[in-house]
Length: 433
Ligand SMILES: C[S@@+](CC[C@H](N)C(=O)[O-])C[C@H]1O[C@@H](n2cnc3c(N)ncnc32)[C@H](O)[C@@H]1O
Image (cartoon, rainbow, N blue to C red):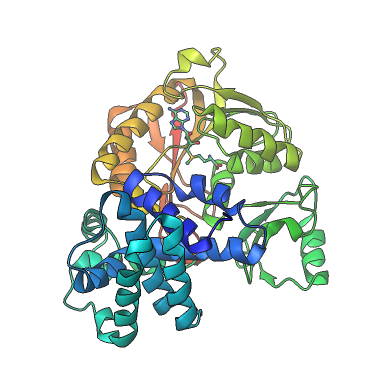
């Protein structure tokens, strides 16, 4: 039996929400089951959309079903969410959305459920008032888990609603021109010749290209020759703020999949970079990405928190510490993150970040610079983390991020400057008097 698109989407969403699997892992493999690019795109659209609207889809179901489907019927519950999602959010004719969803139930061993599914979907068609959420809990109104809404409200009493709204948007496609392989002028001329709409909205970052419309990047000019990398604007600030120089010895302590490693080597092609990551499987991507871009670094699988495993005693001039984090700044790009992260994860991640920061600090030379980065918007991982470090480390001082960003820290919110949510802090080891 060939794969069924809606049954596959429902199964993937079930795997994320009930089994804690990441869409970044399971979706690309599932897309291989479909030859047609439109089917691959629709599968992603359905999974992303369901992740974005899950509480409201569930709230509607609660009003139409006496109890949710459980145990081996759970994937069928997600199929019902998907049916409702299609009716409300996709430009699929209603009769096709209902008919195809009911048909998909057969692929999930749900023959006995087709009447129920049909009934729920018909009710949704007939009762638009089901989609009124003004009196629903905040988690339903915002489509975010309660703990995250509370954390955002507490941290950002003025901006939390904007952050939530940005998380519901689709992320744009940003590229970074690989200036080692291609000038910005040539790349933009090639885009123009191919009639691909783009802009360069940040004057201080001309290599950062924002495409008007997302597309298959392998058709863009010079993909195979490594003329560009796909990288959000916010991530492109990392190398800019670290400001590596030729001849320097640089540590990229949590490097995979290597997006920022490549950028460091574009700014300082003669720098020596040691790129570490704890996860050997992710280092395969680093090797592939650096090879495509034409960059070289020493790549090691190691725990950054255990320098005894990987450090030979030679001090680094600069360190990029792009630590593992909650990824709460990139929810618009990875809408499943809000369901994968749980409240206790934040304290555990903050502890891990603290351990890594303390462990790599001795490997930095006096006068050397460390850039701490996360794609989180939560203060425990960001401002509070850095403040705790500065309080405990008398030889550390905060310094301006760059000539134009004179603060020592920057919390970017998702959607701000059309970028992802990111945090940067720049620290210098005081030179010995
Ligand atoms: C935010 S990602 C890094 C993204 C990367 N800098 C880039 O720009 O492509 C964090 C990385 O930290 C790695 N990691 C987690 N714990 C680590 C540890 N103790 N030591 C080194 N790497 C670690 C993860 O495997 C993950 O690849």
